Length: 376
Ligand code: PLP
Image (cartoon, rainbow, N blue to C red):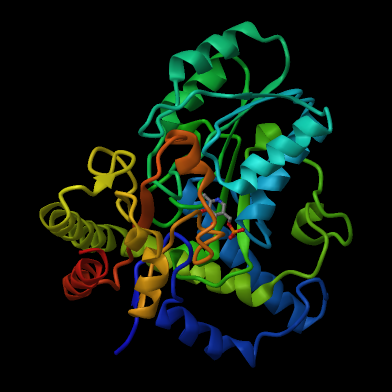
């Protein structure tokens, strides 16, 4: 029997049409985009088309989009270069950010490059906006606010527009890790008043190892990787041509099918939640799954027991892929800093189920019956 994949916040399978598109172009399109003869020019033109696709989905201008190797690199670039190039000496963030942000801001603090302030979060993972405003009002240091749009573990989302407004009012820069929302939620960088946002191809059925960063013209940075003049002098190194083209193709498909995919994912997730609630009355949902949380994520905790301790492993053996901790430690079941921060004393076992439009209610039935076999 084929496996069931309910870990789409960790990564997504490539769309077959993206694979077809890639196989169709690879033998013809192989020039170095920096070469000035025809092979190079064709490759360069293809990259610029891809940039246009990404820029259009964000309502950004082409000169504000740069390709990188992944979401982690993009987040590192935004945070470290803002400190280095824009005079940022205070960062306000939250303890439930992805490690790509959390470890970066902690390093900046350790190196004494910035003062770091972590906002309080409630049990649902919501950040305290009044506290943010107080801090922004108070400080005289150039400040960068870094808050993720949707949390990758529990799905809780921030009010991007409200935080953008606050940052604008008090003259702070605003970075948002949007890796989990690109291709799922529309974003208009002008309305959101963000200075930096980030994306990663493998979260929306594109390839791994490619991402992008949006940098607002008013907050332009210097290169994060020095070398050649690629990416308008912003990132040295021959471009990941195929990765970039495939990511743009995947994004184009995700945008065109966004509403249909959302409905499918949401209905499978609702069905799963209903089944869970009726079969496992002690199961609890984290975050705000049905009041504004990311529609692809359902984080569930089960009471502690010898059986629930082995839940991830037992599900894997039964052919079901889910994760316990964060996306990066998917499968390794290495506790989660997010759940640890929200519920420091809880011994309950958390499983994150995350869905794609390829999932079905029949898969849900199978997962529920397997959970019953394991837990009851
Ligand atoms: N930010 C968030 C919210 C994520 O979920 C992930 C992926 O797990 C990343 C950043 C890192 O992206 P990448 O795997 O492309 O480095």
